[in-house]
Length: 255
Image (tube, rainbow, N blue to C red):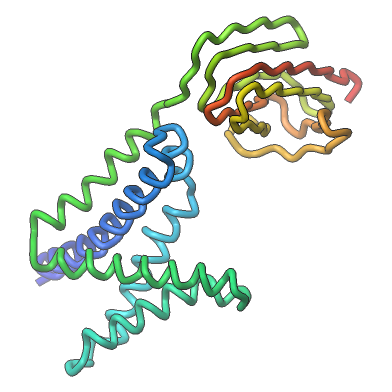
């Protein structure tokens, strides 16, 4: 009896994973098209932990709760479930604040909830579909381990406290590491020259790849107070851009 219950629980869970996997694949397809099949931008977007939480944690948890709520509803169960999935999609956003933006986001959430339900429902009917949509997201996870940055005619010059790069094409990211100690302060000057109107930006990460807070000294200069010793990185990003950038930095040894 225990073995049978475990098998039933496993099969039930696979339907929820199928629903989440189907939704994740649909979202991946949308992001791939909306980014113009730019693999670097696609991987950056699809890697956000927020998406994983919404799909695989919030989505599965709500689906299980809905099943419990409709367990004894025999008549019109389909309609009731659809309604509850729509409510769950809106609830994630409007519980924080009700405004136009949240209502739009809630509508998107409701649509995603229905897609989740379609995936879970079809997994009951088609075993091949079930395991395909469970396994397929693993290939997207594999893509996250690759850097799809593209550089053309990239020329760089680096000294102890300066980094200069010129390029004909840059789409992706480039990291400039700094070896710093706890209590030190690093002041960074950065200037980006754009020759073709492409996009660009920058941010700072610590060794755990967490974003690091910084104080803006001026338009092109920021200051970072180091909390933990290690290698910090300035990440310069480019979006189909041609040009050059220069980064210089000073480290306050006195902390």
